[in-house]
Image 1 (cartoon, one colour):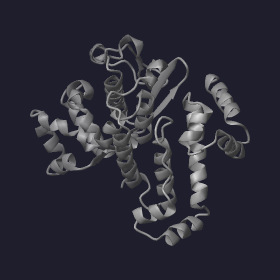
Image 2 (image 1 turned 90 degrees about the horizontal axis):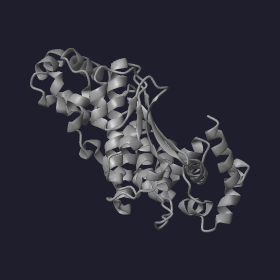
Image 3 (image 1 turned 90 degrees about the vertical axis):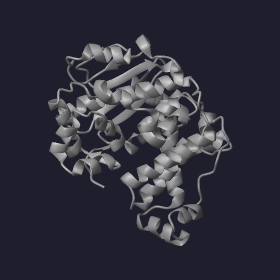
Image 4 (image 1 turned 180 degrees about the horizontal axis):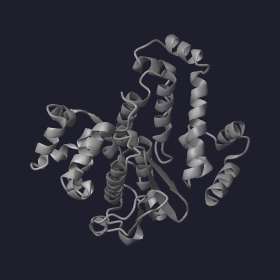
Length: 345
């Protein structure tokens, strides 16, 4: 797979419905146009040509012209994973952690404090037109997914900031979003009340959520680490611990034997490959637990006991002891320090 930024072709196929634009696209791409639309992903060079052709055709905003044709199904397993998540917090976390299964043209970050939750979109293309159109679309996608969970418009309680200058069609954008918008910000972001993060998804289903996350993980593996066994296992464990909930039945991480069967190899061969990279499965599990512990401490209000349960510890004391070994301090003190650092930014 190319290292160039990519976008799922699903998001571009609706251009085929524009009968006045299609002759222009056919003149630009020739016979390759059909295979481009039928492919799984489109890469930056082709996205640039597509968007520039749209702009030359008189399209000011790709979102306003075509974006409303995008549905939940357009997002594939990622969209269904988000909707089946237990609450809005986990839904937005899933969107940022697995967004790369649909596009790498931008990255998404999710953070919140007691008052406000924020999704930040960062352009990865370096192309002004792509950055503007994809940022507007990313915010719309996030808005639609959030509104499907909270079951009401985000409205004036939310706020959108764009990193790009105010476009001529800004009034139409504000009308479409139904949310106040500002421009020339330090970054592109969607902000909303943090209290909404606790709203349960009306379509929440633990089994479906785990299944969809597993599919997202597999796609992510194929895109980012197909031949790296250590990275494959890291992502497998990352997915496993991310799927654990303090209100659900805890599932033990897969054994090395189970992973070997999944990767169509022997346990001995898998252990040898890990040893060749100066690690072991036990070490990778501990690292995955540490990473997930720090994420939950920094980004959620879960109690230490709940976090311990999510990580598979029967007793909080065992988790606290392990965390002190990893980080040199207790989970509570680590969280306090992380909150201080966050508030000082």
